[in-house]
Image (cartoon, each protein chain N blue to C red):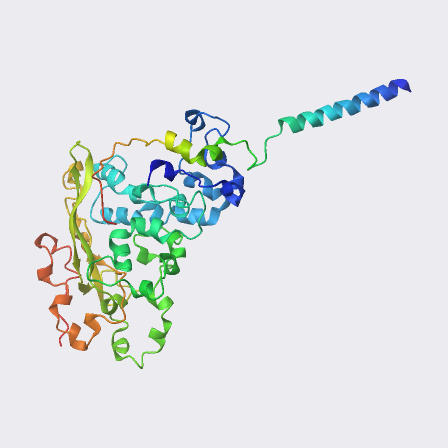
Length: 357
Length: 66
């Protein structure tokens, strides 16, 4: 996208809209009577989400203030759980600010423009879109894993059935949860508003008589264990230095795997014994550029994490028959699948004994 | 009587001047502001000439899989 396109209004119709009638400077500052760009842009606020949206949309803006999208508190809590010190000015806080915090979003970066982290730019003039664009907003950030899975961009893996058969967009399932629940949480799974398969597929739970597999496994297995395919796993995220000497993020090439393991966040809401696990890119020395041993208790959390792959199918290789899964070591995360340095961290999710045929 | 007519006329004139003055200095209603923002940001050619990138001290190699 060219720089000029990012700020192009396309037409003046926006001025007649509810937001347009408010006027530019009320939200963006600057001087609307100046004819020189430099003067007009003095004290310009490019993204006024933080200070302006809550004037009219107080409830939702306040709730969103502490959502995962805004705070990226999921990353912070994971680093703290691994012994990281995120107090202001600490080496890890600096690393977080430089390389992690930029992945947050704001009201405007979902409802008006593309996310900053992906280059920004107005999506459709300055139109305020109540429903963010799957292509330009959601997948712009959640593209490499969820987006590619859902749209079938991983070679040999079909797109999600919700896309191929119903062309459902992200917000058809994920709506209110995107603004959080009004409480600070560590993962999206702690948000009571987070969507679940059974929100739509209630009959699966109420009518198991015709499906012995459901009758047997509904409370033991997450839906994805039987209904998802191989998904992307990421490894070895590091802060490196580029040719100009500027610190940058790097990671090893991702790998496609399907791994069933023990549920690391088992609860009454998610009681399953077995779930699918995705390898996250963190490693013990991810932030060593900023100091030694910044995550001294790295093994406190597993590196194979509860996952909900977005390539759902009715029929999968593992649900073809009982023994397609039972006794099939290839499907389970075993000791052999885990890097030696990460075995202790993943002790709780590694399957010690494969269900017998 | 004549004096009274002059006083009333004077007061009326004063009121008219004040009203006219208020209208003249009142702020434009929201959306009616004289704005160069919309004029410039709707002009493709002008934007092409004037749009510039804000340089950031950030690595171009920075990339992640989200």
